[in-house]
Image (tube, rainbow, N blue to C red):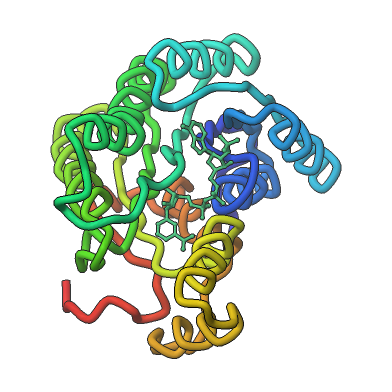
Length: 263
Ligand SMILES: NC(=O)c1ccc[n+]([C@@H]2O[C@H](COP(=O)([O-])OP(=O)(O)OC[C@H]3O[C@@H](n4cnc5c(N)ncnc54)[C@H](OP(=O)(O)O)[C@@H]3O)[C@@H](O)[C@H]2O)c1
């Protein structure tokens, strides 16, 4: 299947490792030019180098913090300066800290709001004028299965990521006339650096072997295993492609069947 991504420009935030990096590599494999960011410079440069090496394509790396408005503006502006257009934006950043409701202060809530909500809002707002210029575009937000089924002990994610869904649904309707399609993807348990760190922390807290924790977590998933970052990339690259030209306003979980609800 030709995904029609050759020559397109795809910006992927939070892409020095994990799902973001796999998504950027996925776009580059389809012939898109990619622009990636993260806060840590060394790992970001390594990721861009890996993408160039593996695909022979172009990859621009920008050190930027998605909690900062000026960094988001610079990231988008630099991408358009380098590649002359912008077709696809994948919003992504780190996750908010775990914890229950009474643990968090207003400051914690504001931090999570900037990390997971304002970052998605600002990236879309910066990108839309460029997408209009080329006759359309795609926004894909990486959120979490917490928007389908709130996760115990993750109140910040449960609440703030749900606001991203409301924003995206609104945008999908407002921007449809511009042929800009907006969708959300909700990872379940995906085997990334972050997921491994979380399992390790849990094992240490419970004073139990990490292998045992991983086995239990995987056993709760109907497919019996964690997903891979490459499986996430497959969905996102497809949603951003010409083959997904009638899909907008959706919120799709990719979770091996973990979410129990029917919507
Ligand atoms: N893995 C899972 O099972 C899972 C499940 C549900 C939801 N999620 C969510 O999906 C997202 C991606 O997860 P992942 O597992 O791929 O994470 P990851 O392996 O920790 O990768 C996160 C990437 O984002 C970058 N990043 C973090 N904060 C940033 C910021 N403020 N500005 C710019 N870049 C930033 C990181 O680089 P720097 O640290 O150098 O900036 C890194 O490149 C997270 O929001 C996570 O909460 C993950």
